[in-house]
Length: 488
Image 1 (spheres, rainbow, N blue to C red):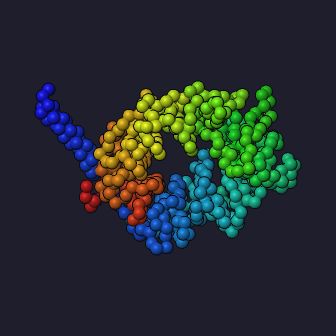
Image 2: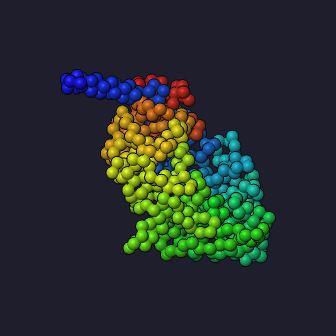
């Protein structure tokens, strides 16, 4: 082909592609961004994200509850999209994070307030109500549900109480606990795979109370330690991942009521539990063995029924702070290595095709987006998709995807789309990765902090954080009047 004709063809193809990108970049009349009245930070606030860094999304409440760090007031977004004060007994501050539970047998929500009492959100009530006998009580330290017993237990001091309909009642008396060698209870955890409750007493001793009410003292944690509980089903084990110690609990072979416990790790520094990685997808505990650095590289291992075992293909060098990331959309776990990306299928680790470090660059962010059935990677070198076949494919977008900070993504389940925060504003992505601009989204601005705090339970509107205040992304299919008057 003559050069002038080839040039013409290339220009024409470029214009066609540009036209397609521009078409995808046109505003989508279905979505818009609207401000929340009175949400802009003042001189008494802490600037960017002053409100939404401490936000509680609790099913049954119409709005996310904001508890700003300045401690002045608590806030919700009302039906008129205005920030108004919240007066419920829970939550009060960031100290109340992870202090509420849902009873699976009743759908009732029970919460304990730091420095306050116990409150309940009954299905359909729309608000928390304090239990009659707890409003002036203090020192509630933990809360846990025991589904097989249909009990919710709160610990006050070192004493356990059952949360009733309107009041508390003791679970075990002081004398009943003493009969089992327990001075008091500091923490408790439900362990379905053991058919038991794990109890950590005030002396950091570990006890098992099985579902037939047999007690057994089986081990201990470091003094004052506690942590999260993880059930590694493949290994037939339950782990307590504490700050200073990690304990492994198993049923004894051939015993109906016998259990054993062993320490996997003890450290004077905090962070013992973080040395292990949990794959909720495969119910496996993973561990990176550093090996002998003089002559052997490290290797990923998983906990099996007879101890830790090397994972086939796991002889890779991880980057600093590289933690496995479950990807339910692909049914695999992503592992970031020093030289690139890898996928774990519960059996072996394989490299992501064309997923090398030089291609993706530093600080990649992975987003599992079940609403559009995609897994996207936002990097300083552009936007990529990890495909079901295990390949990394470049995905050009009608907005800038290179440089730092890179675009952020959010799965908007209520509307069946993903939302992208970019240097050019907000965009929505559909299942075909067609991107369209969100009207009014250019006011947001792209930063390093998360741009969204989830949806308001009552409306499905997506709550957004920006330097100028708080905004809502509105879906007019869910709220027909939500974008009225907003120019596309």
